[in-house]
Image 1 (tube, rainbow, N blue to C red):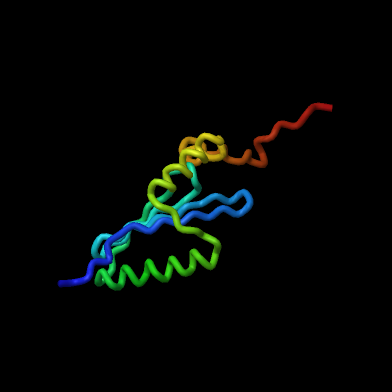
Image 2 (cartoon, one colour):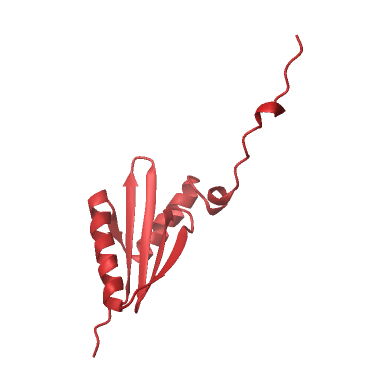
Length: 115
């Protein structure tokens, strides 16, 4: 019987004003990575690998890199609690994270005051 590498790995980073999460879901040779600021849904990327072993090896390399950068392990329940805390503080919400910013004014569009 072939070994299964399926599972979920979640990491959180809190350094000063930086509050981020990283979540990897491995199903066979398909890896789904979701990452972003706590309190937001984050961005999701799906990658396919030649084998489940290759996908698991990539995740292990990422986990080592995350640990070196200060990320710590979380359970899915803890991630949900962290997301809720971040939203409650009003630090970042899904609405403010995706709200488009106003474009800068064009140089010629500024009105000059009369003297």
